[in-house]
Structure formats: structure tokens, C-alpha cells
Length: 298
Image 1: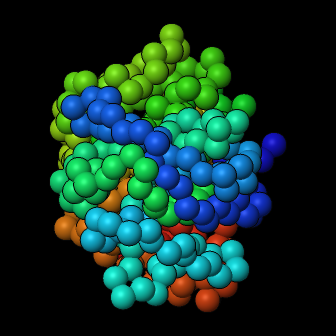
Image 2: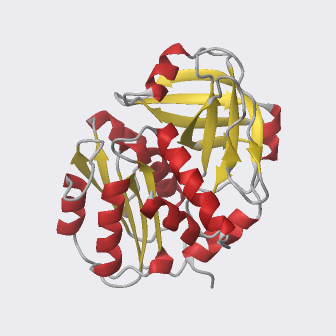
């Protein structure tokens, strides 16, 4: 049976590429911290084999108006930024629901300070934007005895999608959320225990999220772990999961969704430079180890 990382690598190699324009069909606040957005477009019919927590990027107009150009891709590589006088702004989101019949994707956008919040204020139903995806973020291994899901507010939509997909295997969830109402986005499952940590954007070593996870139960058996948070928090918790909790490296998926002190555009640019270097040196673009190399060093 393939490991979690091997299966994510296999799915990534399938080339689940989707570069298209979509129109905004609806926008509505669903909690104090999140806005639910529905986008639609005929080319979304090419979205196949959808998986829990699939990630994509929107190409948003830097000036608030206009239709951004679609990205260019190299063989097996990530989407590159279009060469325009004022190129679009890329921001990452998670699929919460895909309506195949209507070619609609629903996602929840965190209204944190920065470009995404400004875009949400300016955006209107009917606007056309770009979409580039999909990146596999989760695979459930049938051999796991327990699941451990950890994240901050930026990871809450992905965790929600993963919870929905889980079998009856017990799962423990730690989420750092700014608002109590944001926790409503998480489905309730009898076999899933959820712990909320106050404060949606912990950073660095020793965060309240890290403290909560370290103080939590330490069950035996095979643990499949999923972790996404600020880069510094991710590094510390990754070290704990592998070194102290005994999670096998092949059963861990970790991601730095953001980095303190860098906006998403600068972080993406730094990650792309590192990615291009390691791939040029022979790294497999679809291998989760390549992503780890990039995110742990940027």
C-alpha cells in the first residue's frame, strides 16, 4: 500500500492542471472571519478526481478592476506570473465544494488584513478573475489508526474539507481561530475531537497552538498527521510530530501557508526561486519532499 506522501506524489504527477477564467456568482459572510465565494466557468468541467482540501490560486486584478491574464506553466512546474505592466496578484484558497453539473467551485476566504480583504471589499458578482490549480493536499491512508489535524485560521477551510472526508477512524483537531463563529465552518463528526486555540494567526516557536498540541494526548498506533500554519509554527510542530510524537515521515503532510513578515506575493516569489533551483538540480517537481525543501528553507 502506498504511503500518504507517495499517493500525493502520484496524484501530483497526473497533471491535474486547471488554468481558466471564472466569474463570481455569489459572495456572503459565513462567520466573523470568513466570506464564502462561489465562482463558475465552463472550463471548470476539466476539474477531475477532486480530493479533500484541493488547493488552487486565484489571479486577482492588482488595481481592483479588469480581467487578469492566465499564467504560463513549464513542464511539471508551478504557474508563473503573467508578464503584464501590472501583473495580477496570486492568492491561494481551498475547494470546499465542487458542483460538476453547474461547473461551480465554492471556497471560504479568510478576511485577514491585506490584499485578500481589500479584494473582497471591491469584488462584485459578475467580475471575471483567473483560476490556476489544482494541488493535492490530502490523502487518507486506510492503514492509519488515528488522524491528527493541526492548523491556524488560514488552514481552517482545508481542515473542514478533510473532516468531511474522513472515515470512522478517530481524529483529533487543533485549530487556532480568531473568532468563535469561525469554528462553525468545521463539520461535526462523532469520531472527531476538536480543540480550539484562541488567536487565529500564531507565529514562530512556542505559540499557543504549539503548546496545545504538545500538551495534548499521545495515543499509540499509527498516526497520520496533517499540518498547515505560519512557517515558523509549522517548523516547530513538524519537529515535534516527527521527533517526539513518533509520526512517520511518510505519514506527515506539512505546509507553510504563510510567513510572518512577508506578504503572500513576496513569499511566493522567494519560494519560486528556491523551487526552480532545486528542480534544476534534479528534484522531482511532484515529490512532497521538494515542497518540504522549499518551505523549510524559504
